[in-house]
Image (tube, rainbow, N blue to C red):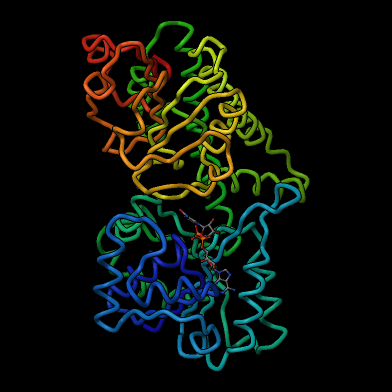
Length: 432
Ligand SMILES: NC(=O)c1ccc[n+]([C@@H]2O[C@H](COP(=O)([O-])OP(=O)(O)OC[C@H]3O[C@@H](n4cnc5c(N)ncnc54)[C@H](O)[C@@H]3O)[C@@H](O)[C@H]2O)c1
């Protein structure tokens, strides 16, 4: 099939490359000419394990191409995926749909034969109805179908998640696009992915309801971890015990920093905004957002306490600053709140991240990127493991530090309490 992906970010690039690997002809479009030029030279704009090889392989095979010419790409494709960003609006909680609407207007000018136009971006319920109106202004109803096909991939695991998804959700009540899309996804369905054809609005809501639920699960165990700390209970025992109940399930029950990333914070706010418009009170999601915002403050206060409320000239090392491991994505990482708060109190912060230096800290006083774990650790009073990269899982702290009077705050519970006790490390973790 001939596919066009509009937007070559985490979702558009990964799904475009994977669709081409399944034998389809895929044109990836982006308005960022720099990105397109880099991709044509096999320079990948994001960090995503395995993506590099897959781009090179399919580009070489001639099934994958990159362009900034949206008009040509739309004209020569039958299936068009919209994969542009839907960030939170500058003023308020709602999703900023300007990228979606601008892509839709561009598409509407270039429909030369029947097209299936699919929204893969995460959008508020009823956005599909609005897209239909925009495209109808310039085209006959018979020339296009608007479908919702939310994406559930996780950064860091994106290729695996795309190829082996738990489910493929297609939101349309029209037979023709439903049949064609089932065929497009058939290699994944035959490997075990569940297929759900539902209404367009239900598909849009499934994505938000899923993300809000997962954000709730994380927030829930984070609050239980606070309780464990007071009661001398190990939160990991609680998570394991809870997870043994199939109704609950063990995943997303790992206590840690506030949830972040490009999806949960913005999507929980956006569903709340939609609910407000339809006069529905989503009080539970409201509390989750509040609790998550408080979590970064709570952990910042815990760091203050670990340094006896005197951060002046204290040296703090951060290992990992992205919102989770195996991604370079800094969007809404809890570090973006915690690090400036520590710098404000007079601390000197060195950080190391396997995906390199971050622009978010360029103008924050006394914050420096170090290009190795060892150089970041040097002379630290406090080491904070913020992200769960494998690189941080077997560090010989004592050997590198060459001193005893440092503290280690492991926000991901990577190290065992027994080992830390044996190594006589002044060790602190979450909920245990
Ligand atoms: N990142 C994730 O893990 C993830 C997972 C599931 C769903 N989503 C959703 O998918 C959507 C995309 O997310 P992302 O993280 O890939 O975004 P992103 O910001 O990484 O990429 C979006 C890309 O779209 C391009 N773009 C914007 N308008 C364009 C236009 N008119 N023409 C061509 N290109 C255009 C931008 O230049 C950018 O490269 C969002 O709605 C997001 O919520 C993201």
